Image (cartoon, rainbow, N blue to C red; front, side):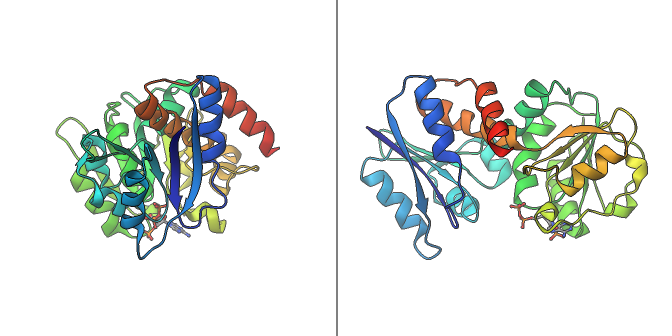
Length: 272
Ligand code: ATR
C-alpha cells in the first residue's frame, strides 16, 4: 500500500491521518497515512529515509516547514514565495519536490466554501509570521484592491509588504493601533488566539459587511472572532482551511480531488 505521513513536533494532536484516510475512502484510493514525530536534529535525514524506503508523499507541519523547503530539489512557485513547504513528493528520479498548499487552501475556503470574493476588496491581514507568509501569494492572486499587513513587530510586516507589493496591488505594513479605514475582509494569521490575546485593532476597521477569518479553529469562536461578531461582523474560523490544504496535497499525490464539504461538516459536528 502506498505510504504517506506528516512530520511535526509535536504531532500527537494532528488530524491529518483522519482527513487523508477519509479522502482515500471517498475516492477509492488504497493508502496509509501516519503521524511521524520529527526530530529537531535529524529531520532532513528522516525525510530522506522515508522516501528511500518507498514512501510516496509527506506533509510537514510546525516547526519544520522552512527546513523542508531547504531540503527540496525543486519547489513550486507558490512555495518559493512562501519560503516554506507543507507537502513533499518524490519524482521517479528520486528528486524531492516541495509545494505549499496552505494559501490555496485558505483562499478556497474563503472564496468557495464561504462565498466571499476577495477581488477588488480591502483586505487586512493580522500577523507576519510563517502562517501569513504562506498565504500572501495566493491571496494576492485574487486581485484585492489593497492588502494591509498589521503586526505587533512592525519590521516583520514591512519585510513582507516589500516582498509582496506589486504595481497592481499595494501591500502596506502597519502596527495594529495605527490601522486606518474600514476593511471588507480581515484575516487573523497571528498565533495570539492560542494565548487568548486580541490584537489591539481600532474598532473602526469593521463595518456592517466586514467578513472576518481566523486561520485557527476551535470548538468556541476564537477571541478575535468573538470581538468581530460583537461588532456586527460575520466570519469563520480556519477549520475549512485545514481540510482544503489537505485536499490540495491529496490532489498533488493522487490526482483526485476529494469532496471537502462532507468532511468539514463532520469535523465541525465532532468538535461540538
Ligand atoms: P506562525 O507559523 O504561526 O506564523 P510565527 O512565525 O511564530 O508562527 O508567527 C506568529 C505571529 O503571531 C507573529 O506575527 C507574531 O507577532 P510578532 O511578529 O510580533 O512576534 C504574532 N503573535 C504571536 N503572539 C501574539 C500576541 N499575543 N499578540 C499579537 N500578535 C502575536
